[in-house]
Amino acid sequence: MIRLGGPLLGEEELHAIRAVLASGQLVQAGEVAAFEAALSEYLGAPAVAVSSGTAALHLALLSMGIGPGDLVVVPAFSWPATANVVETVGAQPVFVDIDKNAFNLDPGALAATLERLCGTAETRRRLRAVIVVHAFGAIGDMAAVAALCKGYGVPLIEDAACALGSTQAGRKPGSWGEMACFSFHPRKLMTTAEGGAVVCSDPAQIARVKSLRNHGLDSLADMPDFILPGLNYRMSEVHAAIGRCQLARLEALVVQRRRQAEAYSALILPQGVLAQAVREDCRHNVQSYVVRLPVSDAGQRDKVIAKMRQRDIETTIGTWHIPLTSYYRRRYNYGVGDFSATDRVFSTALTLPLSAAITETEQQMVIAALSETLQAILGVA
Ligand SMILES: *Cc1c(COP(=O)(O)O)cnc(C)c1O
Image 1 (spheres, protein in one colour):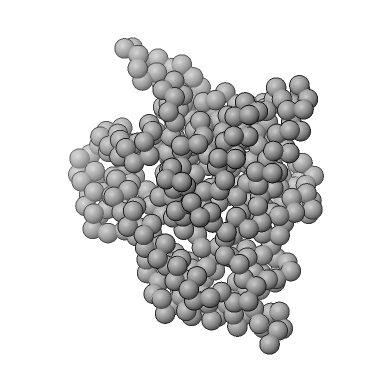
Image 2: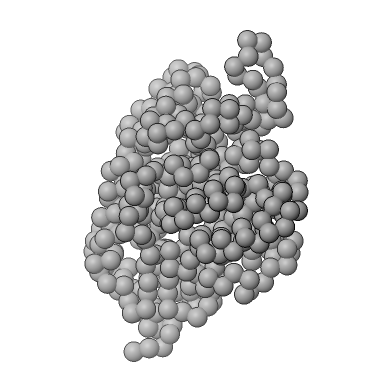
C-alpha cells in the first residue's frame, strides 16, 4: 500500500520521551518552555504552546474578547475547526469563497465581503476579525489580504495550522496577522502527536493567552489569583519534548517534501489534472500535494479514490466545504452555488501520497494509476 503520508519519528524522539518519563515531571516543567523558546526563535515572535491547533484558534478568539453577536470572516474551504471555534465562542462565521487555482481565500471576494459588512454601522460594529487559512501550507496573496484588513481596521488572524516551514517573500507565517495559530497534529509537517501554538507580538495578548490556557491563572502575580474564566489547554512535557526534536527536523522535512513535489511535477500529471497554483514568491512546505481532477462532481472524484485504493494507493479529498457540512447547512441555510469556487474545488480536489517513505518509482506508479483511473471513469481513450 502506498500511503498518503505519515510522521517522521526516530531515536531522538524516543530518547526525549524516555527522559521526560524518567524525570517524573510530566507537566509544567522545562520542556514546554524550551519548545516555546525554540519556536519563538524560529518564527521571530513569542509563542505559547497549547494542546492542539483547535485550542490555539479558540484561545486566539477568546483572548481578543470575541463572543456572542460578533462576526468573524473565514474561508469556506478549510478544516471545520476554522469555523467551529467561531461558533463555539457564540460568534457567527461569515464565509468567503476561495481562489479556485490557489485554494486560498480570494482577496477579491474578501474585499466584497468587507465592503458589505462595513457598509452598515450595525455589521461594522459586530465584525471583529478575519481568519485567513494558508491552504495545505501554501501562503497566498498576504500583502493584499493584510492591506484589506488594515484598510477596514479589522484584526487579522492566520490559521497557519499547515504552514510551519513555508515562507512568502522571505516572510514566515505569523508575520502578517495580529495572531497566528499552528497545529502539530501528525498530518502536519512536524508533530507533537496532539499540539498547537499561538504566536503573537503583543505582550498583553500573549499574557491573556497564557492565562486562558491555564484556568485563567494570573501567572505574573505574587499571590495566585484567577483573573479570567480559563480552560486547561496546556501542552504536556512529553508532547513538548517530541516537538523540540521535530522542530530540529523541520527544514530537512521541507526540503524533502519540495523535492518530492518537484518529482510529481516532472512526471507530468494526466491531461486536465491541475496542481495547486502556488505563488512564485512562496516557498511551499508542501504539507499536502493537492490536485484538481477534470471530473464533473464529487461522485466521480470519490470513484477515483475508491479505484486508486483497489490499486493499493491511498488518496483522499482536499479539505472540507464548511458551509455544506450538515451543521452549517442547517444553521445558515447554505446551498450549492453560494460559494462557486469552493463548490468546484471541494468536488474535484484530490490529495496524492507524499512522504519521506515514497520513492520516485512509487510516484510514477501513482501518476500512471491516476491516468488509467481517469480514463476508465471518464471513458476517454
Ligand atoms: C489541522 C488543522 C486545524 C486543527 O488542528 P488540530 O491540531 O488538529 O486541532 C485547524 N485548521 C486547519 C487549516 C488545519 O489544517
